Length: 263
Ligand code: LHQ
Image (cartoon, rainbow, N blue to C red):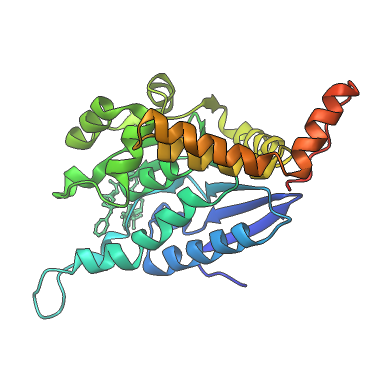
């Protein structure tokens, strides 16, 4: 499918999704959100895709919601933000979080508001030195949305998430690294290669086991130990039946590198 506001390409088993409204710092519109839902759905369904890489075109990663969609209506009424959130982010964020394949975010520039939510909906963030993050919601009189209250505390902890959300403070790449918001900071001109190489490394691993790990850790945040142990055992029963488990054990016994197939 041809998209208007994103670009989707393939590098081996990695699907690369690029937010593509560089003159608006890739601010999110309804069109972009629908296109992202479509692209993540395709990546989820395509067995040949074993990792996703998300990035932005130009100098920004994503400036959050396109605010030009949210002026007063012509009748002078305030916009229906709740309906918009349900139409856009309540579809997009779950599909990003729940896709049972690794998702790497290459944060090439500023991420603001819902743009931060997109980064923390991914599994691993690699930042360029030019990356910056702001929970910009408070600067325009809003509380965090687009999953920001659920996702950000899981990445940086509740105290830091609250501090960032009530201040709207702009955090640079080094500070983001120090608080665990990103895993690595690389030179701007190295970001594309480094993030693609990392996504390709993840794509070569046992994809089903990665999908299970994602779901288990996500669920364990809101269950007790006994429930987590039960879910781990159920998942491991599924994994014990995979080709990749047999291959991993056989390769270990034969003292050779495993060749995982993602099944
Ligand atoms: C933009 C935007 C933008 C449109 C830059 N929209 N054009 C959900 C549902 C419903 C309602 C509201 O919100 C939400 C969730 C949210 O995401 S709320 C948070 C929305 N985002 C923001 O409040 C951030 C607004 N942008 C900024 O504060 C700055 O642009 C940042 C700090 C991101 C970057 O600053 P600079 O590097 O100085 O760039 P700039 O401000 O010059 O922006 C470049 C262009 O992009 C500029 O257009 P222009 O025609 O002057 O070149 C901006 O107007 C445009 N742009 N963000 N969100």
